Amino acid sequence: MDMTTSIAELGVESKIPLNKLRLSPNNVRNEGRKAGKARKPGGMSIKELAASIRHLGVLQNLVVTESGDGMFDVEAGGRRLEALGVLLKDKVIAADYPVRCLIVPDSAAVTVSLAENIQRKQMHPADEFTAFKRLVDEGRSIEAVAAEYGYTPMVVQRRLKLANVSPRLMKAFRADEVTIDQLMALAITDDHKAQDAVFFSAPEWQRRPENLRARLTEREIEADSDVVVRFVGLDAYSAAGGSVRKDLFAEEGKGVYLCDPELLEKLAKEKLAATVEAVTGEGWSWVDIAIRTTGSDFYSWQRVQSTRRKPADGEAKQIAKAERVLLQLRRKYDTAEEGDDIDAEDALRDQVDDAEIYLESLKAVLQSFARKYLEVAGAVVTLDSKGHVQVQRGLVREDDAKRARALEKPKKGKAAAEEPAKASMSEVLTRRLSAHRSAALQAELARQPNVALVAVVHTLTLKSLGDCYHVDSAIKVSCTPQTTLDRWAPETTSSAAVAALTDAREAWLAKLPKGEDGELDGDKLFGALLALPQGELLSLLALCAASCVDAVTASERDDTAHPLALALDLDMSQWWTATADGYFNHVSKARSIEAISSFAADQVQHVEKMKKGELAAAAERLAAGTRWLPPILRRPE
Image (cartoon, rainbow, N blue to C red; front, side, top):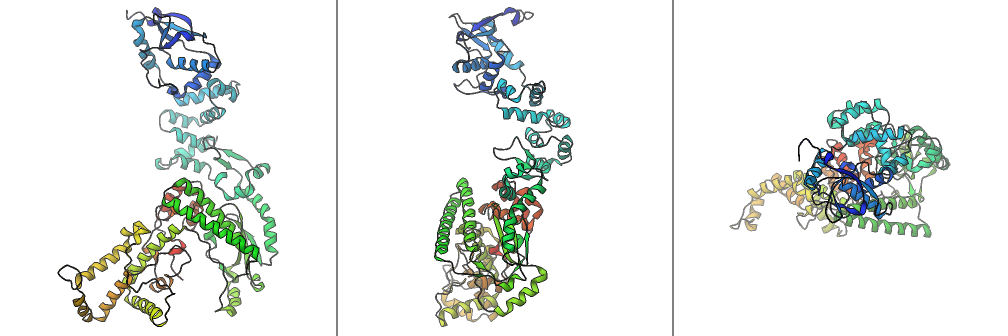
């Protein structure tokens, strides 16, 4: 073929029936030839291309060669042929539908196929966004444009949203300085100045899509994760005239932001008014509303004494049933946690939270306060992590603390029937943390012989003189060394506490007499101990007692280790640090947020939007250096 003569000049344009066309073996594009596989070069699938051809026809002719058997082989245009096949199967067109073709010589088949695929340049996404916007600006509806190109209306809406970002951002996007994910995050607002300010003022490491989106919505409330929205209801907020912003790129059911926090708070207070009135009627000296609180907000409050009446038969049955359900759910949760079943774990955690809330509501009815306390104490009406109404009663303000203490003095020494604290952790996590506490108690006890002597004598007295074998103790005087803490908390093997005890043990073993087998010589040992100064003997006693400490428990309410921890002035922040794997991955999202509110309150609004794994990692990072501890590990009082 003469190089000065084009293939187009050699070819003949013709309309050929669809049933006379087939894909040529010379077609260089093999990708996606498998039956039923939709290819997406240029971002359009075969299905979408078929929808476009249905509305607009075949805009570019196919290039074919005659095969000699009455058929024509398609050398260029295989995707268009496949799309026409879809329309034929759907009975949109007939088998003899005329297709515009350019017939070229056999000798040009491979050349034509290669040239068409090499010469074609994929449209930049920015051009696609702009083109969709021009179509709509010309007066076409979103639905019509979607139908023409085989997209859903939502896809077209998203393209239009991206087309509306600031010119500066679009220029940076074309230059590959902005990613498509960043562009989608910035498109949550139509304010070009805000888009540019958030992106271009942020350092490179703060330009993650989630960070950009969070900055643009920092004064708004995300509906799917906010307890007040759950309580008020999105419909009620909208009916009251509240404006809403939607993130078109969010997962289904997410990405709805409320733009009027003041209105939401007003609606919440109005909805809580009946509860406030009822609680005020109980006679408290004051009643406040605090819509956004966490459990840690009430830790520092002084409370007046409460009593718990005996439940009636019907109430007792309800409570017993609720406790059984909660216990079963906790066991299922522990099993899911041990089996690393994340989906089941998340679902069961929510069920455990709901069961705990229900049980607490049943028990709250039984709690009562003496009338004299009502004059110095008050109540706070708030919402829990699920958006349910919660009332914190018996709270004493600082100005009334002296009066409250005076009222309680006559009751000193009498056992107050207090409601047991709600368990906040699974049995697995409780054992894990108490294993760390056991290791820390061992390390501390080995350092304090005077306390070790008291602890051993205390246990021996109980069991030898008082015959108190039913009384449990953190020290097992039968001297069974506790060497299996890693069963409950594998990370204890590398902990500072275990390392400290191991060093002390090896130092003593190096001093004591051994036999030929390298083991301690019992006969020589007794004499060696007799010769030791009393101070050294007490140090060895402390080490032996420490090795027998076993405070692992499955119940947060177990205070077996409390007297020992109190005597040792145990500070677990020296021995344990909150991490994602060690704590935050094993508690509910609400518990993690509650913890964060106590050591990084300014970050709560940001982390509330995170998924569980991201939240746990963020909590670990924020907890670093704060010396924060969960209640079970806090310094005894």
